[in-house]
Image (cartoon, rainbow, N blue to C red; front, side):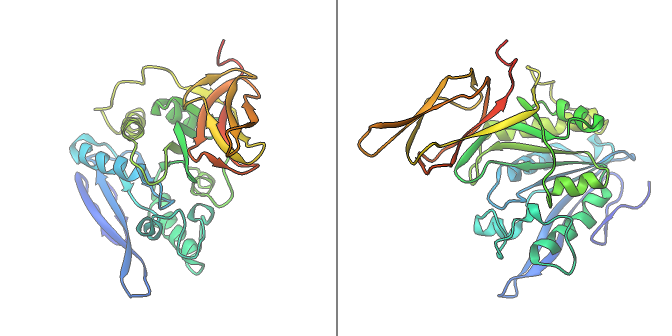
Length: 319
């Protein structure tokens, strides 16, 4: 097998290595490093990276990666698994989505070794992790006091990406174009199929989302021929979605939602109401089409125009 190195550390066949890649120093001169765990099997095969906390407050993936590190061994693996539990170490420390300069790391790829802190970290990740991978899974949660139903977002028009997306086994698979500056866009431009797994909320561990994430990664590894001890296929085939829509608050007030994540709705169904401080109903929120609720706000205090319910538009969902 050819040599495999990350940050100058060589990972031998049938072994695992914990690597700390220096990123930068804090104003106190404390070194901040990117933690990477690499497991290499006995034989050559696909190289899959699994990354989490590219937004520092989206921590479900940290626990997903920890469980994967416990489950996968060099003996059970064909190919190489690169696991990065915390990409945005700065944001993780501060319990923040952003870097210290308020930049969004997931809008800074592919980055530059001479750019901002976000750009330098993105460049390091691209060089040491993405450029050596054949496939990728990036793990996220909702943000801004929102919560997401477990879902895969990916380019479903690419056959290899579609194969992996369906294998993952999330309840919903959404065709999603890439955003400028995102990790998924930068990796896709290098010809690497990438899945984005969204589930749960920021700064919380959601046990169902974590377990589904672990099983999903193992299923993808199985379909890639990397891992034999995968969970059974998901009991229900995923709902495939081409379009989603955020419903926005028609006015400010106190939001009382009458629906829950994963609930199918029909056009004109009442989803909730907005009341004033006296309890008077000021507005009603109704479904604009048939669909499935894949995300919602958890903050009942809303301003006009706030996103309150995320709906997967799927006209045939209800038969």
